[in-house]
Length: 329
Image 1 (cartoon, helix red, strand yellow):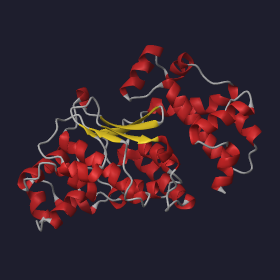
Image 2 (cartoon, rainbow, N blue to C red):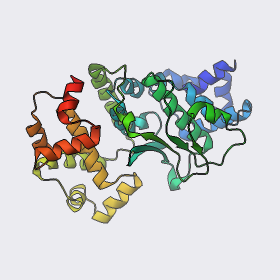
Image 3 (tube, rainbow, N blue to C red):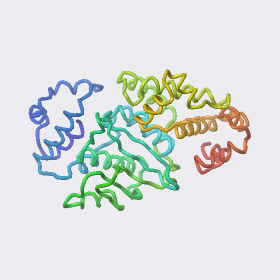
Image 4 (spheres, rainbow, N blue to C red):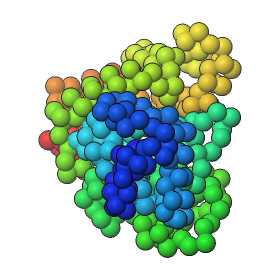
């Protein structure tokens, strides 16, 4: 909502008057952690679009988004070490910004694809304006966070039909843009994952991450249901014992295998990918700890040989564990 207020200020239009028009009490904004129902926010955006006759309003609003608008989540993103960590954090905590949609990442060859998925009931789409807003904010924030204003994705796709005038799209994304696509998504090269953040700060990141965790717990987001926390914990603890099968995981969570598969599909999760992502996150964390030898790390992650661990780590980061550790130091 504060992004809308910034837009109104640029238009010299009273925010108080606008809130009255959408029947929202302005005292609500005296509480920084208060939530606004998505439908109210979406209606406010469309009223704004009609009021100022701005057909591609989402593109404009997305470029106004700053890390400050994202609260603790935004400040934690600023202090990540690199794009890979930022991507993982954005997947886990984006519900603190909006829980009507979520980020899903997929690797295809040398590309990483960020899908913007709707969490609305019956797979109802978020719509053109919201898709514009989140695609635009993702690219604009990336340029700001990495201090690279010429940074552009490989391509961008939208599910909605092509607007009559796409000049705002072209000016922002500076890459091929596809409309009427199967997914709302952004593709970027895998080398982007190793980009370091100039504002990286481990001590601040730890504090902000703890705050985010508490806020997410209070929110009770359906993006991290209780069974998923059990799944993550079980997978993490299973590495030293040779791993856990999908059937064993289902039994531990109280589901049948088919039920767990259905739940994971509902949250755009794949068992093998989830195991690999958790092992990768642990690997990076362990390698950063100089007290752990590479042999110990390979054992902790369930690799039968150190060479297998080194190959996997190179696949994840583009560096050997030794090179990564030297780079981090």
